[in-house]
Length: 574
Image (tube, rainbow, N blue to C red; front, side, top):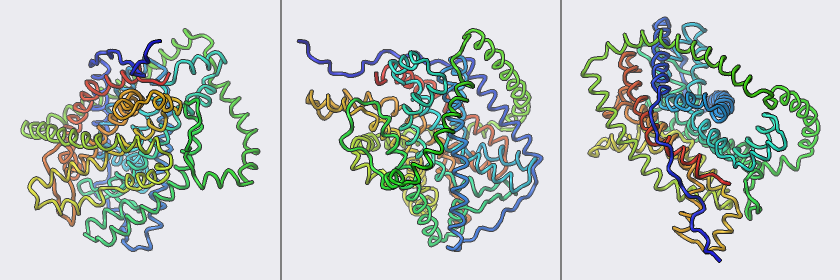
């Protein structure tokens, strides 16, 4: 009788990461598109003044509805983008070689670098009110979508092979495979990352609803604009009212949306033994018991069957793989050629802008990259030390999750940017206080990406594997090394990738803050991007953004992509 192996998963050497032509092409396209946006922005109105933001407590319900509406619209866009983009990247190797590097680049572009391009380009072609609303939704979208896309891609690439073989045996169409296998398998990861996306949206809400570009002052009625106005006027009472309103909104969303979705998704966990303590939701139970629920379900069921039949026809099994591949290949090349032509035209303008950046400014940008990098490493290290044990505890203890998960959701969703100006003033007297405050804000803005992914990974560990470790009498470090860490590895890498990108993004608000009309900034590339945006200095904005993008992409290719391949090829539930 042989002794049982001590490891559930055995790692193998991952593919060696390397920079490809696709990386260079993607960077070229991004530079070109940024430059084209700046070129279009030059035709925007020279002066803009948005509506006045009232700090009256009676305006808060109205502002809350506006903000939730923008967040919901951005989330719908994020979900559609996630499902399509992640699916194509996971199942088309040729497209994956372009789409995943592109995703690395896009998540590394700070929200304020999107801001002048999106906003001023829209105001040049649309009425001001519509343009500002659309720009705000797009900016919130850029703070929500990347971690969802990474999580969905990770789920698709780690579906157990035996389940894929079963779907092939039953000859599922692409639509049936999506609805019966892939969406259920990735439901938990998508829901937890959706909650994280909403938390990220709240974090950047102040930047998305009120912003200044030189002489242009854009603002929208909403909680973000309310909190920013209160901070500018040093009105601590109004800041308290705004945060209290935000907490109420977050609690309602948690109890009426996210908690019921987690209970519903628990049925899709990949396990052979039912959990002893499944998650509970009073609202989910109320809806399930309601007679109206059965009536609606009965009325919708025929429509659902007709829709499924229609989608089966639209997304059938490929009849001729070669013909389909050739057709996609031709269309792909046409699209790629169009993008390259547009990008090259923009690169010519972008090169002219970059030539306006002096050598001293490039040196300052390089020093800023180094300073921001050190803060990012510090924030990720601190986040990893506490999120891993707490996330495993919440994910494996449903009774504790029922209490802690709403608290985590509330704390994660409170925008630290609302409290940050006060924190900066408190730390200014401390040596290095501005640097400490910057690291703290990066931590507050990115640690939740790790925590929510760890919770999702821990919750997805099958109950039968937990029983097996109990039977083998594994405890402490042995249990972590044999079961928990290998099972968490794909989720942990997804969380680290998005947290790293989030930390670089958070630098734009962590290293440059305005309170009471006074600007405080520390050395860093984030501060340079923010100050360049406020001054309308587009050459320096483009240079600093390009430097950040190249740095983040290099880190992703040299570190995170290698670990991602390891998670995809080795650490999967089979």
